[in-house]
Length: 130
Image 1 (spheres, one colour):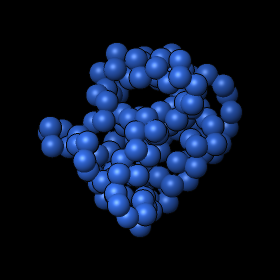
Image 2 (cartoon, helix red, strand yellow):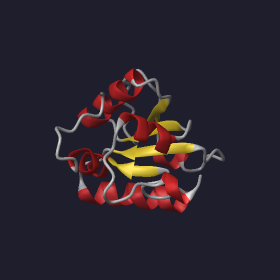
Image 3 (cartoon, rainbow, N blue to C red):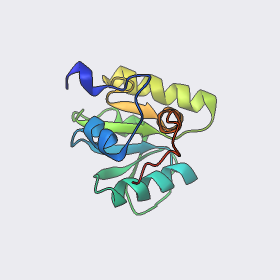
Image 4 (cartoon, helix red, strand yellow):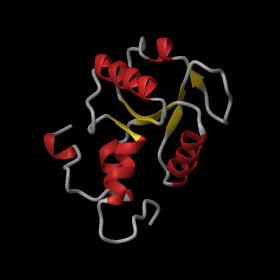
C-alpha cells in the first residue's frame, strides 16, 4: 500500500474512502461489544469481508471469535483491524498488539473512535452509509 492510502487529518471518511483504505483485506473487529456488532452489520451491508472478532471472550455473533493470542500468532498479515474496545487499557493493549504484529495505525488498523473522529470532521451531517 502506498503512503497516499493512509488517512490525512483533514480528510472526511466516506464509504468509498473506507473501502479504499481496507483495500480488499479481510476486516477483523477487536472486541465483541455493541459497537463491534454494529460495525459488523455496517461492513457486511457495505459488501466488505469481515473475518470475525478478536476477543478473549467466546461470544458468538454470527462470525468466529478468535482469541488475541491466536489471531496475532497467525502468518497472514493481509488484514484490517478495527478496534472497538472501550476500556482505555484494553484499547492501548490492542493497539500495541496490532503494532507489534506489523500493522500500521490509520493504514491497516484504526480505532472506532478514530473512525468516528473522521466521520465527524465534515461540516455536513456525517454519513458513513451513503
